[in-house]
Length: 248
Image (cartoon, rainbow, N blue to C red; front, top):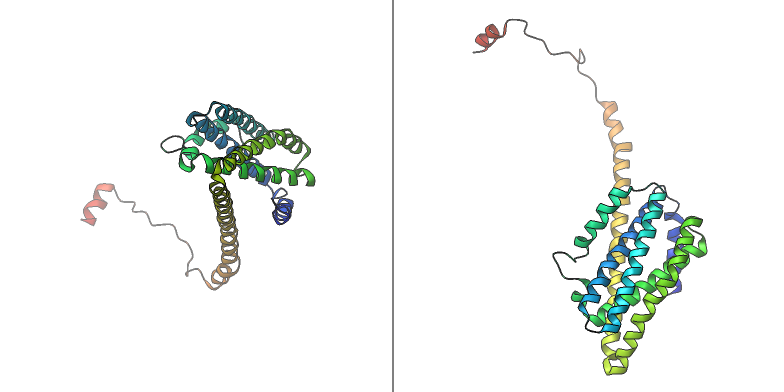
């Protein structure tokens, strides 16, 4: 995609993959994305009226399902999730991706925008995984898994690009260019929103730490216990009936 993006991914990955608990967090997110893509591709295979494209969508869906299993197994190997919780998260992916109770991605975008989305998203995944492999992050087992996935990702980015080029030859070049620009802009905007959210979480943690570490201690030092300190409440040792009559 670009030298700037590769440099940014490299700098961020050197930190994120080394933070405690973050390998599990990142691998879980990748696995959920692959599972969501599986549902998207199945919905596209059902919606398209072209048998040849339906087959490609279906093959793509099978690949994504296998990739989701790879990521889940790595997360489980790292002790980040058990099989029962993984099954529950995968079941919830149908609703979160809009397949149940909403329109699929293919239906929302239309075929040209959907093809543009698939091409751009898969190209970004190839770039991201390549940076991880080049930097040997986070561990040899995960790198071997990513290298196993890469040939499938190259197919996933090649066939939608071929379909878009076919649309150009049909006189729809302007639609294709507009779709590619729209997808890239939307993904850039979504990435910025995710980054802003993560920064917000970090800053809120920092401010809370400063609040409790700097502002609260002086007040605790200035405060003083009342004379006599803590005292147990006095118990009325009279019979219950007598005590009740006296209160009335």
